[in-house]
Length: 250
Image (cartoon, rainbow, N blue to C red):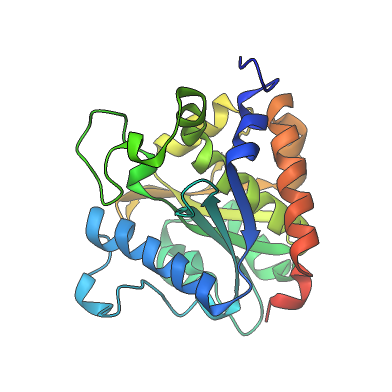
């Protein structure tokens, strides 16, 4: 518990901005972060495919993108996107993972496409995942960011904030049936936050060992810890204010 803030979640909002991507410059920042994480750090995508240092794919142009910015440094700390299913556009899960999805979850993909979305490409910059004293990153040591201990503690919430931004985007677009492909550690983290993702598929090799998961927006919000509701409400309000989300989905 902080002296200044009633919760860690509220403290996070003092140190980070969360916005829908609205400009090409912001899309470039997201692409460069994804390149650092997906290509350079984990090798999920071959770096040579992206000579400009920006990881992109065919789903980006009909997605909503969210960017998380560290206020003090101006660095891109995290990102996430929401892809809406349409008659013209498959979700990545449909394009690459469908044989591994449990049969009970196939009907919504076909029958309720106007309510279905996929949250994907969640990334957190490694500089905000390393503890003080670990290997220096491109930003140097954490002390170079001029962060005290209170601020550093909020870095652990970047991934949760990205997930909450995914829920906010789903609500803003009325795409409240959410699929995502996740490694096993993220669902465990979400359960501690009161968010219970349903296992919707077998594990497969897809940017590492991942499985399909499913949740409805209402279910996630109804079981979410109270302190995270404060964070979600703030994120939702900021994204709703920044742009009309519905107008940005092809």
